[in-house]
Image (tube, rainbow, N blue to C red; front, side, top):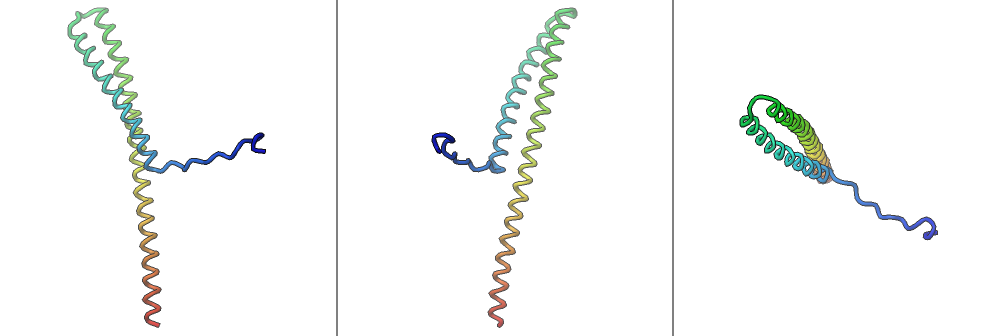
Length: 121
Protein backbone atom coordinates (compact mmCIF):
# COMPACT_ATOMS: atom_id res chain seq x y z
CA UNK A 1 0.00 0.00 0.00
CA UNK A 2 2.87 2.39 0.64
CA UNK A 3 3.97 2.02 -2.96
CA UNK A 4 0.57 3.12 -4.19
CA UNK A 5 -0.23 5.94 -1.76
CA UNK A 6 3.23 6.81 -0.47
CA UNK A 7 4.50 7.03 3.07
CA UNK A 8 3.01 9.41 5.60
CA UNK A 9 4.85 12.72 5.67
CA UNK A 10 6.01 14.25 8.92
CA UNK A 11 4.16 17.46 9.67
CA UNK A 12 6.20 20.52 10.50
CA UNK A 13 5.29 22.27 13.74
CA UNK A 14 3.08 25.30 13.22
CA UNK A 15 4.91 28.64 13.21
CA UNK A 16 4.99 30.53 16.47
CA UNK A 17 3.98 34.14 16.94
CA UNK A 18 7.65 35.09 17.19
CA UNK A 19 8.42 33.36 13.86
CA UNK A 20 5.62 35.26 12.15
CA UNK A 21 6.78 38.53 13.70
CA UNK A 22 10.35 37.93 12.52
CA UNK A 23 9.18 37.12 9.00
CA UNK A 24 7.09 40.30 8.84
CA UNK A 25 10.00 42.38 10.16
CA UNK A 26 12.24 40.91 7.46
CA UNK A 27 9.73 41.92 4.78
CA UNK A 28 9.51 45.38 6.34
CA UNK A 29 13.28 45.71 6.11
CA UNK A 30 13.26 44.84 2.41
CA UNK A 31 10.56 47.44 1.80
CA UNK A 32 12.67 49.94 3.76
CA UNK A 33 15.61 49.22 1.44
CA UNK A 34 13.41 49.92 -1.58
CA UNK A 35 12.31 53.21 -0.03
CA UNK A 36 15.94 54.21 0.49
CA UNK A 37 16.72 53.45 -3.17
CA UNK A 38 13.78 55.57 -4.26
CA UNK A 39 14.97 58.40 -1.99
CA UNK A 40 18.35 58.36 -3.73
CA UNK A 41 16.62 58.39 -7.11
CA UNK A 42 14.43 61.31 -6.04
CA UNK A 43 17.50 63.28 -4.95
CA UNK A 44 19.03 62.65 -8.38
CA UNK A 45 15.89 63.90 -10.13
CA UNK A 46 15.76 66.95 -7.85
CA UNK A 47 19.28 67.90 -8.94
CA UNK A 48 18.34 67.35 -12.60
CA UNK A 49 15.29 69.60 -12.21
CA UNK A 50 17.48 72.36 -10.76
CA UNK A 51 20.00 72.09 -13.61
CA UNK A 52 17.58 71.97 -16.56
CA UNK A 53 15.81 74.96 -18.02
CA UNK A 54 12.06 75.28 -17.91
CA UNK A 55 10.51 73.46 -20.79
CA UNK A 56 9.73 69.95 -22.04
CA UNK A 57 12.97 68.44 -20.69
CA UNK A 58 12.27 69.68 -17.19
CA UNK A 59 8.65 68.52 -17.40
CA UNK A 60 9.81 65.03 -18.37
CA UNK A 61 12.14 64.89 -15.37
CA UNK A 62 9.33 66.15 -13.14
CA UNK A 63 7.03 63.41 -14.47
CA UNK A 64 9.66 60.76 -13.68
CA UNK A 65 10.13 62.23 -10.21
CA UNK A 66 6.38 62.14 -9.59
CA UNK A 67 6.24 58.50 -10.64
CA UNK A 68 9.06 57.66 -8.22
CA UNK A 69 7.37 59.68 -5.48
CA UNK A 70 4.12 57.73 -5.95
CA UNK A 71 6.06 54.47 -5.70
CA UNK A 72 7.75 55.69 -2.54
CA UNK A 73 4.40 56.56 -0.96
CA UNK A 74 3.04 53.13 -1.87
CA UNK A 75 6.04 51.41 -0.27
CA UNK A 76 5.75 53.58 2.83
CA UNK A 77 2.13 52.52 3.20
CA UNK A 78 3.12 48.88 2.89
CA UNK A 79 5.91 49.36 5.43
CA UNK A 80 3.55 50.98 7.91
CA UNK A 81 1.04 48.18 7.44
CA UNK A 82 3.73 45.56 8.07
CA UNK A 83 4.95 47.31 11.20
CA UNK A 84 1.37 47.55 12.46
CA UNK A 85 1.01 43.80 11.94
CA UNK A 86 4.21 43.26 13.91
CA UNK A 87 2.88 45.44 16.70
CA UNK A 88 -0.36 43.43 16.79
CA UNK A 89 1.56 40.15 16.93
CA UNK A 90 3.69 41.49 19.77
CA UNK A 91 0.54 42.44 21.65
CA UNK A 92 -0.86 38.92 21.13
CA UNK A 93 2.41 37.44 22.36
CA UNK A 94 2.37 39.68 25.43
CA UNK A 95 -1.24 38.74 26.21
CA UNK A 96 -0.50 35.02 25.83
CA UNK A 97 2.46 35.31 28.22
CA UNK A 98 0.25 37.15 30.71
CA UNK A 99 -2.36 34.40 30.54
CA UNK A 100 0.30 31.72 31.07
CA UNK A 101 1.67 33.61 34.06
CA UNK A 102 -1.81 34.01 35.54
CA UNK A 103 -2.54 30.32 35.02
CA UNK A 104 0.71 29.34 36.72
CA UNK A 105 -0.03 31.70 39.61
CA UNK A 106 -3.51 30.23 40.07
CA UNK A 107 -2.17 26.66 40.01
CA UNK A 108 0.59 27.47 42.49
CA UNK A 109 -1.81 29.39 44.72
CA UNK A 110 -4.37 26.60 44.75
CA UNK A 111 -1.72 24.00 45.65
CA UNK A 112 -0.47 26.23 48.45
CA UNK A 113 -4.04 26.75 49.67
CA UNK A 114 -4.76 23.00 49.72
CA UNK A 115 -1.52 22.24 51.57
CA UNK A 116 -2.35 24.97 54.13
CA UNK A 117 -5.85 23.60 54.49
CA UNK A 118 -4.48 20.07 55.13
CA UNK A 119 -2.14 21.41 57.79
CA UNK A 120 -5.11 23.02 59.57
CA UNK A 121 -7.06 19.77 59.66
